[in-house]
Amino acid sequence: MKEKFAAISGASSGLGKSFAQQLAKQGHNLLLISLPNENLSTLCYELELQYNIKAICYETDLSIKENVWLLTDWINKKYSINILINNAGVGGTKKIEEVSTDYVERIIRVNVLATTILIHRLLPNLKENNEAYILNVSSLAAFSPMGYKTVYPASKSFIYSFSRGLYQELKETNVHVGVVSPGPMKTNGEITRRIEKQGFFGRLTSRKPDDVAAYCLKQLRRKKPVIRVNLLSLIVLHVLPTWITLPILSNKMKGELNVE
Ligand SMILES: NC(=O)c1ccc[n+]([C@@H]2O[C@H](COP(=O)([O-])OP(=O)(O)OC[C@H]3O[C@@H](n4cnc5c(N)ncnc54)[C@H](OP(=O)(O)O)[C@@H]3O)[C@@H](O)[C@H]2O)c1
Image (cartoon, rainbow, N blue to C red; front, side):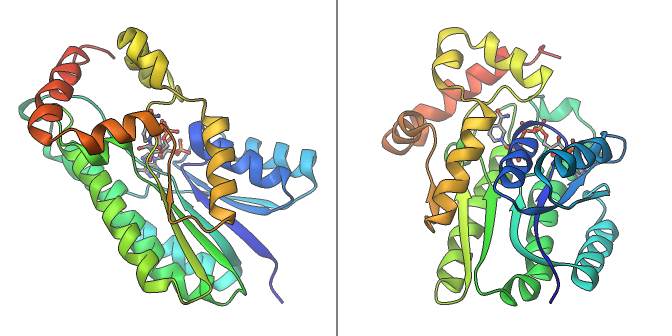
């Protein structure tokens, strides 16, 4: 019998690191994935020491298709995974005319393609368990298009829709699929500056990544297909029509254009 692992992408910092810490605390072995040179081995070492679990690290750039295939081949050959958290994601606030094609392509490759291929290729592995869980990290941005972000909200809408469909298709199996659409979280310097620029509204809606991760894991265990954090913002986005949210949110994003 192979030991079981929880695989988490984007695990070296932010929400991904919070997922890793909390699953380690609950006694899960971890398979942590990050971009190269993000100090992932130190995190693995610390978690192993602190929680007496196994933590394996794998550094790769998920925007490259071959890397996603190599990663999934490696996992399938060596490990049994019963939790998969697709947390890696890229975004940003920029004018579409001022970014390179590579910039746009990278968002789609990491957020959409890598997530989809990881799930598709790891599903047989997950199905070998009595119970297995997939959690996909979407965003509140999935629920309204917005100028100056354009590709990011569209990619997160894909994640939301894909996750809901997948949940329905797999609901009679041992694999539960959940999706979370967080609002702002102060996970890195740039995002923190953006949230602070939003003033009172930013402070009101932002959540701590540790709290979001804890809540998500609890709801995932309860087999909730849609995990709702930032309930107020979600209700507002569902109630208001796009012709109202689109110009308001685009205007807000325009105000963020010069935040580095
Ligand atoms: N922060 C927010 O306000 C917010 C709001 C809504 C949704 N989200 C979503 O929540 C998730 C986590 O966000 P976060 O704010 O904690 O982190 P983040 O700083 O936005 O970065 C996400 C992580 O994704 C990984 N990543 C990015 N490009 C990658 C690539 N090419 N290959 C492999 N990994 C890559 C990186 O992980 P490593 O550094 O470990 O390599 C990076 O730290 C993302 O999906 C994000 O879209 C965030």
